[in-house]
Image (cartoon, rainbow, N blue to C red; front, side, top):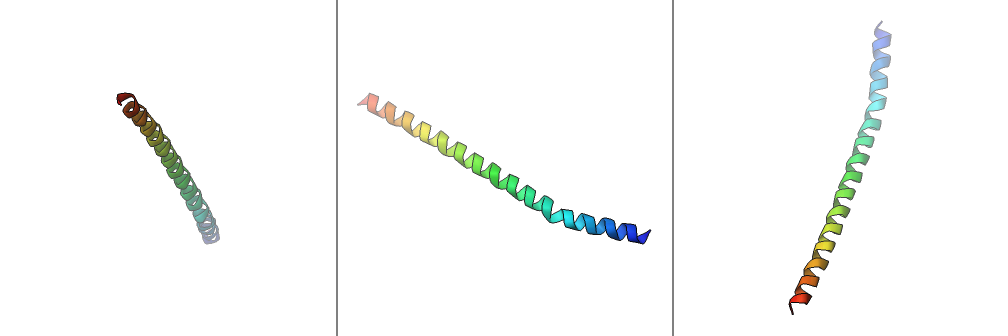
Length: 57
């Protein structure tokens, strides 16, 4: 009976870093996606602002 619990604990410990790595990878990918989306948004906004200032002159 105790052997079962020890084996279960070992399996959970081995699965722990794996899940942690997966969470870190997902977090890094989502941050990269948000940064690229923000960069694309600011670039489009800057172009629009440049176009508006050119039209004013």
